[in-house]
Image 1 (cartoon, rainbow, N blue to C red):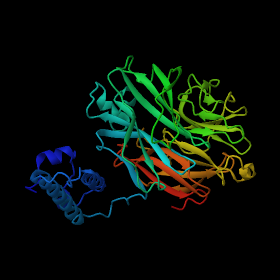
Image 2: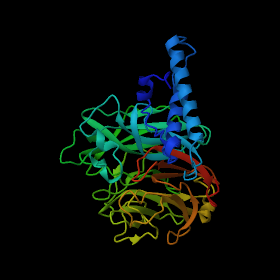
Image 3: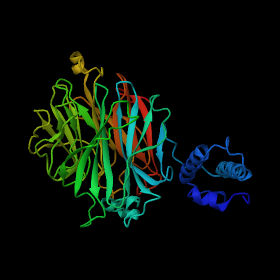
Image 4: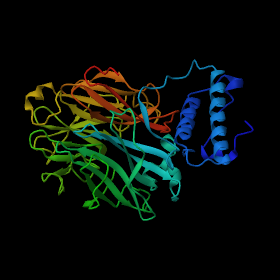
Length: 443
């Protein structure tokens, strides 16, 4: 280990508890840290064009450290480790200049390109007074105070097997930060992304105020984005929705409400050239998502603060929402959830397949009776044909896990992007993507 440079270890945020060799009490932390080190290793700048002794020494030192970690791991008792979930890590904390990545969302274009967005938090070349609130664990994280947030994205051309380099769509500064991105891919090929621009520094102790909704457009599968950003009148809350939809018959574009205390859905009947707010939705909830039912009604799932979820319907394409709502028959640990409508054909002009429509819902499938954040475990996908009863079809992650984003990829395959964690309370270690059979849940 004497060949390892201190600056290398510090640059990796290296904190592996190597005491396992002596105590046999290693936990999953080592697995995640080996993943982190490997990602750092393979993303290290190529030495092909920089044949300097120092560069070679650093690469050799890092490889030596990687081998040391593996040899240490092999001597530990791993019987209590949870298995590594299937899928691919898309965002990993401590990489690409960010401390933490959160709030995953995903869309797929007609050409099959997956586009994922997240918040890149605590960028290392921007310091704000509230940086610690961007990555604190569990209930100790005052998430609503975090202002060091960028909107970042990646693309995949091979069904999520590999991903492009990270791109920054909106870069925070000392005056503004950007939060809660949600994409909407249309049948015409255009992709829209809605996110919030909020004032910084925070006044009144809550970052989710004084926000303006922004919409950007891409016509090349997310390679580039329009420089003319559409500004939508301010909203009181940026507690976001998690994905937009295109209505099957009318082609109307709808983004889920960014907050339910003051606004309804964000609607466009002009192919995205202009946007308007619908009538206010339910009060006292947030992080909503809308799905279209086979009868063209819209269903919105709403996170409530009392460990329950509520369902609200719209019969006029999102212009108004029924009052009262009904309790969704799922367990909920006070966390965001994802819901999509799955059609056995993705051709919006083929209405003959509407009878094959069913709903998928994903959230941490644990009791809300657990302490806040400790209940965020066991992300599970459930299926329903009527939104009344839900049947679990896939346990995505058997450990600490939190926010989710579902996407239908083709007639039979679906995908889920979700936050996975190392310990409880959840620590948001990475964001992972995996695919599964929409009907059976088979991976």
